[in-house]
Image (cartoon, rainbow, N blue to C red; front, side, top):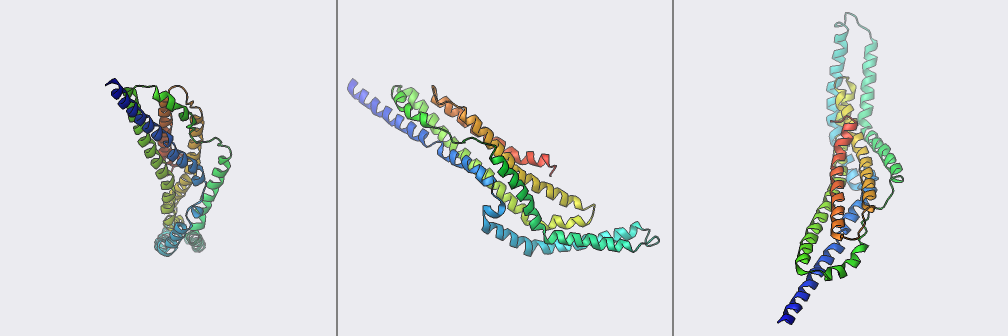
Length: 288
């Protein structure tokens, strides 16, 4: 009877150990892949990230949004001309040069609208140059080294059924957590680029407000938003650099499960800081 019980216990132990090792061995792959791609993705310009999407956004902006911006510019230009005339006491104190001033301001506003796509891309070219320069300074591998897990199997075989069941449940929870965190990192990085495409598609409308001092607050805030989106990539790169330093400081010795929970904690911290980069960049550039 004892022989049968020992055989059942041994088979159950082998099944639990096999399950734990299988879950732990592939646990870091998704996170390593997503975090490793972060630096490459944030260092890519909108035109290179997805040329087909970029071309579609450019066509929409030029064929659909620019005519709307032209109507807004016409209204603002007429309003600006009326304001100039009123300021000169309803033509009682009139100077013809104000018309030249109005024509020049309108000409500049038209040039801004027709070249708004090039201007917005220039903003991101500047931010990409900064990110590329920072990429060489923010060094360190973000890959989590799981080689110490190879020596874990012998230790697990010496444990009892109860502790193994607990470790199996923990490894299962860790596997799901790391998989969810890898999805969050993907959403944050790729979501930023989608946001860039959406903001750039409406560029002619805020650029059409630069013809009037009062209405130009919209255009100024839009430019600050572009700078915030561009330099958000720099903040994301810094977060990944900090994460790399923290991960390399973890030693997979002794209590391996505790070390893995430490890795999960650092990865959760990375996701939290990545979420904060958007609001932090907007706060630095005073963008709404």
